[in-house]
Length: 431
Picture 1 (cartoon, one colour):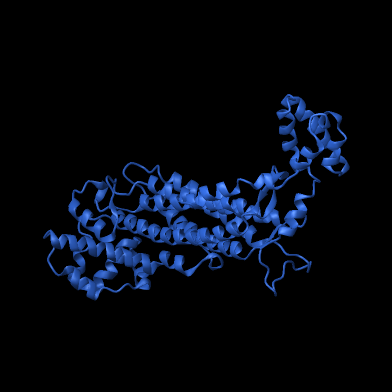
Picture 2 (cartoon, helix red, strand yellow; picture 1 turned 135 degrees about the vertical axis):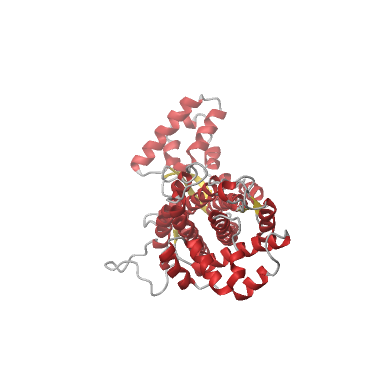
């Protein structure tokens, strides 16, 4: 991923230096097990540790000749460590190291993403509680529906990202496996005890059965979860974008004092950060289909998945890390206008209370279908004339024959729609 959308904490996980360090860690763990079980001479691990030094440029030069990254790595290590280095990789195959390493990198990335979501949840919760009773209009199909509160709107995102936290935690567990099973996964040339030793050393689970590679359904699950998180992030971003539209103006992204919104129009304040998140979400989701297609490999293995994972591993995790942090900054600093929310609530001149009138008529014995038609007729008249819905109801004899004026007035009460907000907040935040 380009520097513009990268944070160093996640980026360094996917750098060559970290990857080679993990390879060495795996090889040394396997060698330590072999020493323990008297498969190779004692002292190999100690000497290799003291003499080995990762030289990324050197490994790249060797790879240009041998056209195999792991062989280039082992050759580089052997050049520094002498005969002790030749005992590394005994009975192993490349995938044992590459797949175990890839899973470790995904776990390292996933743990950072978990902390990102944790920070995001704190910010959402703070704003949700603050605006628990801030009235605003709820919309369905983009059209005014009934009153809600901005806090409740935010609480839906809090619960969604709580689910995302659990999903990611599960996905990290799913890919935290280690395979040291040798060619075609039969353990013909490597003792299964070595796999168990390495797994314990790296705090991984053993892969119950591998076919020289770790099954890619695990990775498909991991990247699918990243795609779901990206979609949740986009839902939040799209909500902010809609609420920032000029004719709505209920929420705005923070706008710095020297920031410029348009090269041509000095008055513009555009929701560029939220729009950016929509774009980044598309990129993250783009990794899901290739990850799913990686599941179906030829026989015990092929390498059609390799080029895919070298791209989507870093790109999807780095991008999501950046995006989650950007969303967190937006949430913490967004400008919320309760004044404009109130203005928009009054925009349709009482139409948002139509269901209450409908229900009141049915409670007075009028059939629902008939009551609906009567209320709808008054509502359409009010909408067309941009006039008071309440006054329109007062002029309808059928309605006034069923509902006294004092009762009708009480139906136009905002607090009716918010009286159970506390129940929902307790349901979500008590956990």
